[in-house]
Length: 119
Image (cartoon, rainbow, N blue to C red; front, side, top):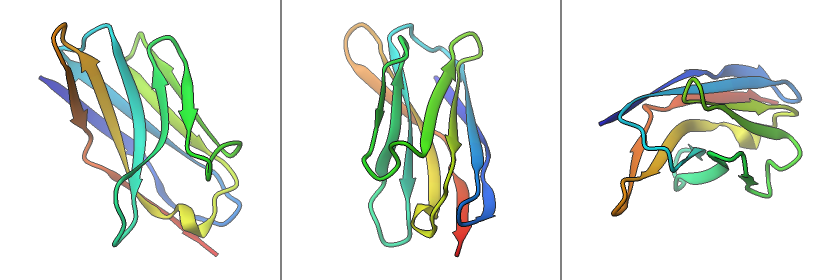
């Protein structure tokens, strides 16, 4: 079993910055990827950024150039540094870990943390 604990988030004015972190613990397999998703009220949960064990990153177009995802493999922790925040970035942000068990991919979610950007 894998547990994900998120921290960070909060409220900020437009143009400001926030950072999120997510620490994973438990039986984590070596082949894995970690990601941040977000969900605004009435919307689906969408991927924001993803990073593989090797450090390859993927961003959704709306955050590319403003957000940076990184990870510390020694701590099984993933970070999301958010700059130039906009009101449309307001959402609950969720951490997700996917790992390959040798037969299939399993995924786990954090509890979510609120990010609110005011204009």
